[in-house]
Image (cartoon, rainbow, N blue to C red; front, side, top):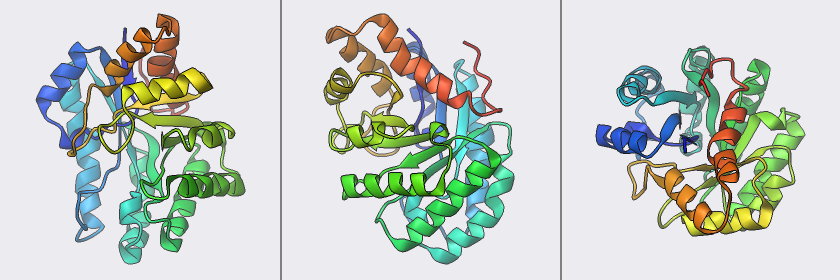
Amino acid sequence: MKFIDPHIHMYSRTTDDYEKMALAGIRTVIEPSFWLGQERTSSETLKDYWEYIISFEKKRAAEFGIEHYCAIAINPKEANNKEFAENSLQILGDYLQRESVVALGEIGFDLISKQEEEIFRKQLLLADDLEIPIIVHTPHINKFEGTKKTLEIIKETKVEQSRIIVDHNNEDTIELSLSYDVYSGITVYPNTKLSPFRAVNIMKKFGTDRILINSSADWGISDPLSVPKTALEMESHGFSLKEIQKVLFSNPNSFFKQSKNYKFNE
């Protein structure tokens, strides 16, 4: 089997992880813009970070036969700094045109503040103008409320829903997310998100259409092999190989093909 991890932060992972991922069948990764774990000192620091995930990570991945793409954006955790966010918006457009960039993301809500909403709306409209895919983060706290507000804003702005992943869904939000025309992301991540077992139970109830599985692996307690481990869990619950490949390869492949920069060869 072959896999795509449509949301992973390789900036915070070791080269050994790339080797393990390749051996497990992961062929492509998409790396959305992340926060550093602390406040950035300036929007200028984003230039260095974006250059890193656009260029250097692509080279690291290629050593192990993995195709690396990225998504560029102002992360929700950084949107509450108004001056930082507004300055960052001024430089964002140019980076979205870069060859390895296949989406704008991840954007959305963290604290569900007015400032976050303003930056979220501006980035949604920018991506829609450029006709590029969007990766949307849903908050850890007040998950249902934040997801509901997110989807209402997407509907209100009239952004093309089929070009959007609403990510980090759980049992409380997945039905709501699937009621829209967006793709629905499920994150398999220890402790704070879902286990493979919980992710599979969601798919047993709601099916596999427009559902993506990702690891969101970062510098926390996380697992870059979450996607292939979910394949094993799906198989043990009676899913066919065709269904497994649909969720863990074909669905993300179809979604990112909406970007002119995505050139993964099936």
